[in-house]
Length: 529
Image 1: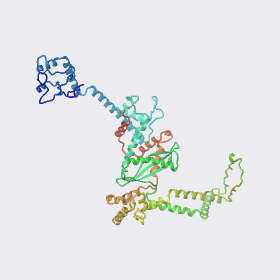
Image 2: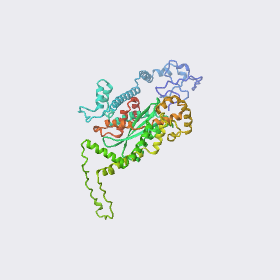
Image 3: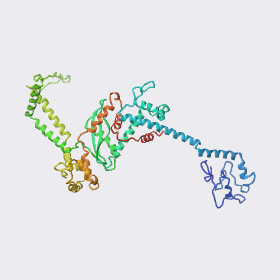
Image 4: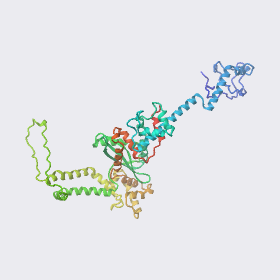
């Protein structure tokens, strides 16, 4: 065991304590502090302890300075000479950073830096391909191929002038090329999540609307597009694309289950200040609500004999004017055979087949009335009474509405956003006279007018923000479907759903800057080896 009060490694300075009195030996003599001068190698323990050095130490202070004895004898010893030479060489290496440890650490640091540079080059090339809707892989990436795909070809082109890009292709070890499909997918996901995190930061304390629409990709898979609509800090309406969710079944239960995945987004913005507007109704809610009501009433009026006769007469007139044969007989379909499952059944009663005497009657019963009924059912399902009440409530926030800022009309929207009615009433009572002589034409104009006074009217501002985040259509989702068709085409129909979603985010949300250094940091945390 080494004593705790002496230097134990090359990193420790010699223990040379300056004491008022040093321990005495057998002859009542003690160590002298002046002996430290010109002896930087001298190490003095403060406690009497045998075997503290390789032999046993020295404590015969009477002969400490005697010729060929004590310190002089030690200095002339081969052990001291070799040790001193090694120590001075070690100090020299320390100053020049050439020790074994420094060399190993430098080698490791160089390897880390090289790997980071490779990942930065690869990530930048992947991002370029994603933004430009280019496929990363080629049909044939073998050594003999003349076209290894966009990613590798871009790196090869860059390697002509960039040594780092050349290292990616030439100097990487077989298991550290960072060009595998799995690593590419991971880098794409990290970059797409960086954009999603940036979008989530915009939601803190804001009201936002959720848009969802469905389309079928080239592989005949149903993809649900998820977008967000919000009012940013500059009071501009923005819509952002979050990604696609694969739908294996297209029914209400499946939709509800898949949209629940978006609760992960709430975890990113969970500060108690965000409110989601779960609806699909308005940019100009007043006009939209009136249009829906008018269409429904008009369709109900059209469902009678006179309306059909008028339409049928106009169709006959159009056909005659354009030389269309209006006397052709109705194509009769082949009569269906009775299933063999019923061959042993006994028919006790039957419903007679109804023959239509004229083509007019046939079209009226089989096409005209069923079409109107189907449209009315769809309108009633999509625009329920509750949704129309909210739409009507939002329209009262339009300065052009005759019931502008009517608190009773605003009640459905207040309840939907879970705001306190008394606060809204008090704030609106102050707002009305303030904007009486102000020229406002839209709800957004009203919001901008209150921008500088949001601290005075916090509830009213939230109410108006909630109104303008109601989308009248899913235009943002439709745009994402256009990108989806360009990304997942017939030549790329085998890509995974997650890869499709991440590529779409990078291609659509180009306004967000990707910090490649942070991408590499996230990747490194997941792959510490």
